[in-house]
Length: 240
Image 1 (cartoon, helix red, strand yellow):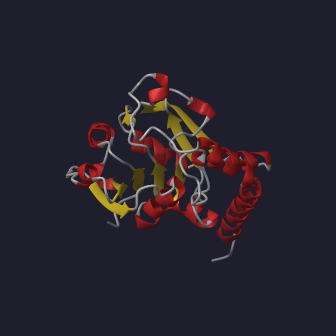
Image 2 (cartoon, rainbow, N blue to C red):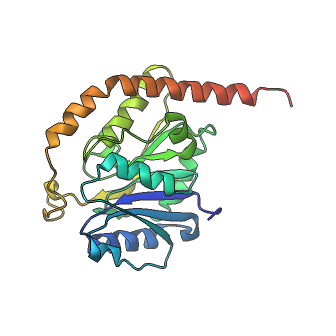
């Protein structure tokens, strides 16, 4: 597992065919399948998804209780991952750009300290929202966690985006949008898929209020990232 550099974090429920379609799109577009892993989070009662068999790249699965909040699932996937970089995914995505993984690595090379938010074009929100954000492991470690555990379904992408926009306002522009790297979001609200039981979210207003309540959390997170950037710079100028 030491050779894996990019981990894809994928909570999923009741969408085995969508996961297989996603996996096939990854297989067809990734430049080095040995370089990636997918860490899935599945519900213990989702027997169809738990029957997933795939051998084209490494996968591992976490089994949890139905109704586990998305924030907790995402962080659990991160803890089980091994890559230098992690990408937050949904199962209703299609990877469209050949060599997308090379482009991600090239983007992070601009910032050797690893503090950056990289994202591609979902062909819906585009630059406005990092629907499928990519972070370095070091960045996640500096933050302490990818996001608060209590987000149920929504706003993890907006939460991360806001942290990095705060960073940019402080003079550290670490947001990299790749408009020609397509991770197409086949979301039912834009007519690219049909609604199902998984797409029906419980009490979306709850996450709206959570996002507002975590304003100070995001402010402190930006400060931690600044400290991480400056600590790296200081280490680089130390005499050998």
